[in-house]
Length: 120
Image (cartoon, rainbow, N blue to C red; front, side, top):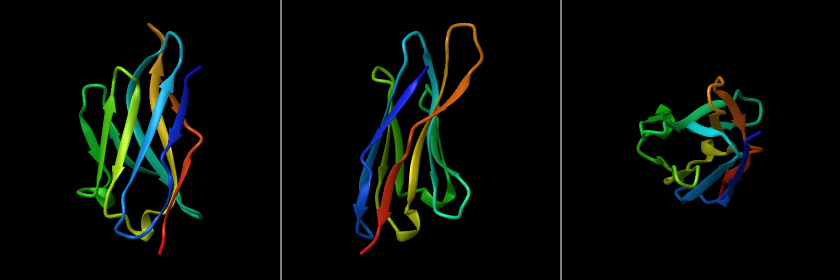
């Protein structure tokens, strides 16, 4: 099994910044693409940003220019730097990682989520 441990959420004022981290661990697994999703109350889960193992990134339109995703492959860790936060960014942020053992299919693993609240 692969475990994802997220950290860095919290309460921040509009215009502020937060940095989320997600570390993946699992003996014998290779980690592929990693990403961040978010889910606000009463809304569907949506992609925020993702990054391939080669470093290619993809962002939701709502966060382009404000959020930056990065990763450290040696640590199997993905980061989300969130700047110029808005109240509408308030949500539970969940980390996702594609992982597999050698010669087996890729499987999606999810973290437990971290709350981000943007409010004055």
